[in-house]
Image (cartoon, rainbow, N blue to C red):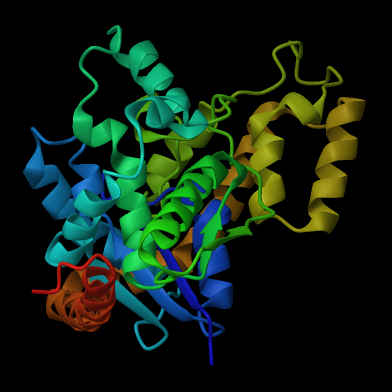
Amino acid sequence: MKKTILTGLRPTGNLHLGHFFGAGRTWRDIQDEYDFYLEIADVQALTDNFDNPEKVRKNVYEITKDLLSIGIKPENVHFFIQSQIPEIAELTVFYSNLVTVSRLQRNPTVKTEIAQKKELFGNDGESITYGFLGYPVSQAADITCFKGECVPVGDDQLPLIEQCREIVRKFNNIYGETLKVPEPLLSNTPRIKGLDGNEKMGKSLGNAIYLVDDEETIKKKIMGALTDTNKIKKDDPANPDVCMVYYYHKLVNSEENNNIICNECKKGARGCVQCKKELITKMNEFLEPIREKRKYYDNNPNEVNKVLEEGTKLAKEKAIETMKEVKKAMKIDY
């Protein structure tokens, strides 16, 4: 039997290259090896978008079309909408008794995200909601509601998986062996940097290339990408290792071409404008098949609805089965 895998995305915007190289490509490559549940986590998206529900609703469909366009196949993967599985919310409530507020506050991933919010919005953390602080508990419910055995994550998400493992172990210690302790499936792809050199790519930072970006948008973004600031004239030698244009060449260009680019850059035989124009061409070549698939789903919204409806129905059946076991273990199966 295939192992069960659970992963998901918060529908707060379209997928960018960071999502694709950091997660989406891996999901596509392993999708037929597991019993694969892919959650569109709209409830978690509402933890910091509670005042803009229309944005979250719209992006449920946007992100589903993006995932289908990169080759995630509904015959292999069960797409489901988190809010349509009330059993997840119910299990979140049960788990909330098993983790302390101080433990949530010490979670490195949560601490980092709170620090980022303070930096972006200039607040002192007083506006952090209970829902946001507690989202690792909800995430633990996501994983275990479907008996998730493996969870694909990057290094930055490992603390969330460890929190889930702690909750499951505590539940099993109190109520008996009921739930599976999930294992992280660690990605070997580092986080993709933004066009500005920032370690994080994101909409709020304005430094991302999205899978839906058209040719003109790609051109504008790449022409503004960070290069070696010490290179003044066209024929000055430069350091490709600090140049975001070369960084993106390595994502979408061939190793042979990248070796040529690297050598020419170091010798001062390559101008930045020329290098950017070549990257624009390569980036559009890379994105064109994804754009073509995306057009199909844009023109066939009923097919997207069907994918979500069928996947959510199957996920709900699985969640109901799990909750029967959980309630029996907790002596509340009246």
